[in-house]
Image 1 (cartoon, rainbow, N blue to C red):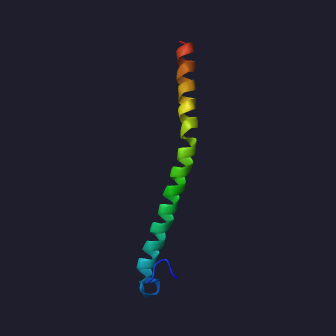
Image 2: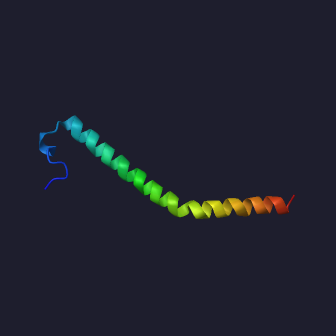
Image 3: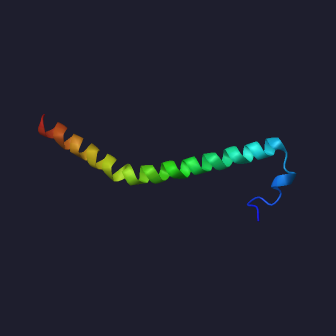
Length: 57
């Protein structure tokens, strides 16, 4: 069973738009997952930098 039941009836332009939208959606989800995993490290680095700057004043 096709994900999009009427895929064979769609025009080539509609298929291209659908493919681009799907690829973009997957890229956004992957970027969010990666960013979510790195977020604690980013905040930790920022706090360490602020502490370093405060100590060296």
